[in-house]
Amino acid sequence: MYTKIKSLFFFLVLIGGTGVLEAQNTYEWGILPSVNLNSKLKNDWSLNTKIESRQRFQSGEVNGEIEENYRYVLTDFSLIAAKKVGLNSQIGAGYLMRLREGELFHRLIQQYSVVQKFSGFRLAHRFASDQTFSRTEKPEVRLRYRISSEIPLNGESADPGELYLKLNNEYLYGIQASESDFEIRLVPLLGYGISENLKWETGLDYRAGGVFKNSRQHSYWVTVNIYIEI
Image 1 (cartoon, rainbow, N blue to C red):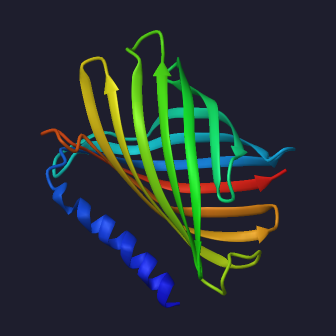
Image 2: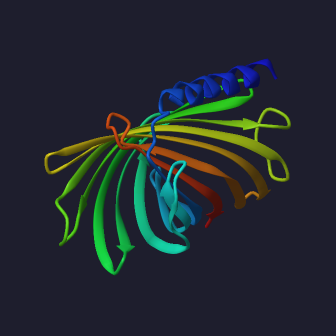
């Protein structure tokens, strides 16, 4: 239990570190549901298929007027193949298609992940890059790093029929044309294993964009994630 508390404290420190982001100018909030299909293949390969939709309920200026209420934002369809290259590491690559405001966006994804197993929790690191293309916008290139921890609330592992806590912290640096941006994401989630092949997670996806700019974006998304092993 002590190690679990230490892991939770570590993430709270990371969250507290974003207290410098006090000058956000705009905000938005809504829901971000997703369905994930995971398949284990031969020769240490795996495949993840994901459908995710973003719907905004409200947006506006911080401490100001509401600019817009409900709006459908986008839907993502992604496919990522990964191969185990070590005892606890994987390399992967994939493709994402985004439908937003009648426009199609295409994204190429590359990633490397490694998992550290401790007594009572797991710590995972993901290093990724992606490139997004469309007919109407300049190409965008992003570098990403995510650290996440899964902490079972009963026992030493998250077994079916038990709750667990997942904490994600991600940093993104993007370049588009001559503009660059830095974003921080904090995602605390509560999960439940329904069976060996089915689990769900729900929580808050907080995103702070424009960190090094005068105008900052403040986003809150209520997430509901379903994971199915097939």
